[in-house]
Structure formats: structure tokens, C-alpha cells
Length: 139
Image (tube, rainbow, N blue to C red; front, side):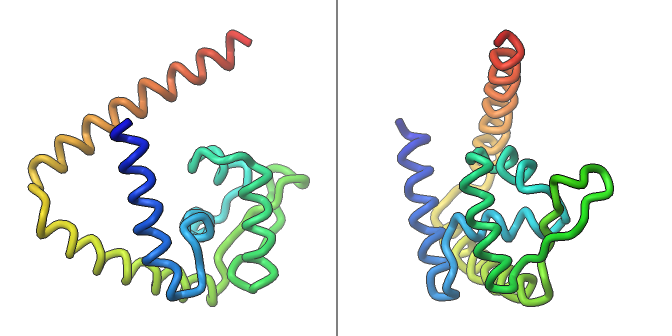
């Protein structure tokens, strides 16, 4: 339950960081993934969302000129999403606000504990990903 609560609080913080720039946490996640050209399917897998929801966000970001779709030399059906120069500006503005927020939060947290927590969460993530893949393979 603590993980769910922290996730909700982080999403709320993300909305506070991105809102003044006219974005949302979900859009920030897609913009952040489009920094390196990749398919919407890969983005969705990385952030743990349905491909269709990420596709909807990516399409809106394209309409706004923040990302552009490029031909994918590996797969003609799955285009690559990449930030435009305007998208880079928006993402940089978000990151500046995020760093400012993080510095304020870090004043109240123990850095050594955060390293331990990050390591533990990384381990949990790997175990869950392995279990998920095994259950998919089993059918």
C-alpha cells in the first residue's frame, strides 16, 4: 500500500511540475521517452501503460508539434516518435522545474536511505518483470 500511496503522490507532484507548462505527467513520460527515437510500443512497455493510451498521447503531442513521427528502418508499420526542437524546449523546461522540486524534497530526506531504497526498488522491479515475463510465456 505504501508503494501505491507514494506513486499517487509522485503523480500529483508531477502534475504540479508540468501543469504550469501546459503539460501533464502522462505527457511528460511520453516526451521523456521520445528524447531517443523509439516506437510507441516500446514507450508503453517502458512506462507500463497500454500502447493505445500512449499512442493517443503521442498523437496529441505530434499535433502540437512537440514530437514527430519518423520512418522506422526496422519496421515500416511501427514509426519512431522523436522530439522536435519545440518538444526539447518543453522537456527542458519540465526538467528544470523537476530538479528544483527534487532539491526542495531532498532537504528533508536522508541521501543514504534513498540510495538503499532505490536499490531495493530496482531489485523488486527486476523480480516482478521476470515473473511477468514468465507468466506471459506460460500462456
